[in-house]
Image 1 (cartoon, rainbow, N blue to C red):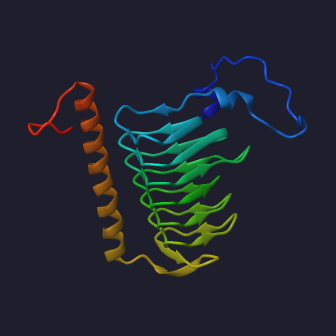
Image 2 (cartoon, one colour):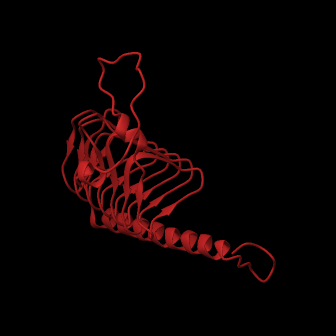
Length: 208
């Protein structure tokens, strides 16, 4: 995704005087508006800042922060970013989440790439410059150190994380099932939001 092309027409006022002007900063990014596909679900309370793109069918759940105030953040098709997760960037390093990726609750991904169909478990941290290969799994609570290249379809765990084994067919099916469940949930929440916006209620007087 070419973020400079996508946001090239952003009009911004003159920047303020900064306390440390010698340090790199991106005033324009602060003014960029996130680009959210109409089929994506963004839960109330989610914070999207700056250069953020959410693609078709993706979902970002309660309490998450995606802060693209320098490089960009991209969340691929039908990927889910679960509750209280944090995605951030570095000046020259974006945060790219591929298609059909699952990030569990309280995951931190910093200036790294998570490739298609990968899963990062609850409370895990992926530090800058890392790449989690397609179909790989990072176990709950793991710490992936800066610049780590996790091969496709491998399971990593521990602090610091290390390769444990290849992803089994059973684990692969679990990842696929989890991703599809969240795609369904996102579609339901989005539809409920549209119904409420039209003033529709359930027959028992409760919101639907």
